[in-house]
Length: 303
Image 1 (spheres, rainbow, N blue to C red):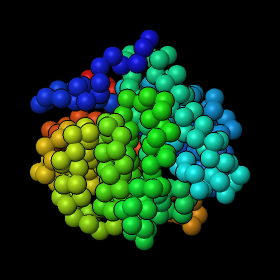
Image 2: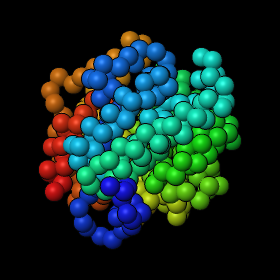
Image 3: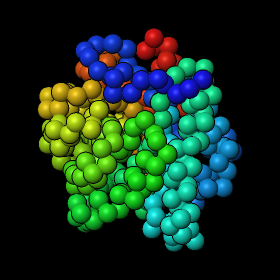
């Protein structure tokens, strides 16, 4: 079956309507499939060495009902891979491979599926938890130079949309939006937030307002955050952008960079998805530690 037949932006247009279902966390699914994620390249290592496992993970989410598959390119950066012996040509090939693998799983699905090319933050390539702090000490121009070749490589394979995700601060958002404006591509932007602010501590209305004037941004919202932080963030986004909203939090766990482990909450955190939809969420799914079983439950809820 071909990929979804109409642009994702068109599916999100207009008031009301059913939310489009995103997939869940790629890393936890790869781990469940027996993949080793202990190295600094994380899911990028699996992309390089065991691509069939990446395709299998995408397939698991498509079978669970996901309508958007997010590629395994989140942590793939030229400098990080160069330190481990990958030249520019090989890294570019990996970025392009990530789109092709998601595309193959999408085309094999029994329902229409879109492909979103993941553009993870600068901090993800550092593999030290920096994406949950932001404020790297780099300028907008320096961050744009980091993201530009990654985005170009991903777009060369024709994804439906770019997923500018887990953005921790407004400086990186400005950089990503700068590069996006050069490409003409469509994208969504998801901040990672805590306590009603970006991870770097900036007010959310200020952060979301950056994307308000971009016709290329088809949705704004949050990902890889505590589910309890979703609804206040959606309210802040709705108030300044007028765009469709997105929500794909994790399970409420906290990433411990020193030990490279997740610290789970004492009790499960509720997912008030109906409230998220009433607030304007049109793209809903899961991030880290949310697997195909949870996506299948969400599929039933959204139907």
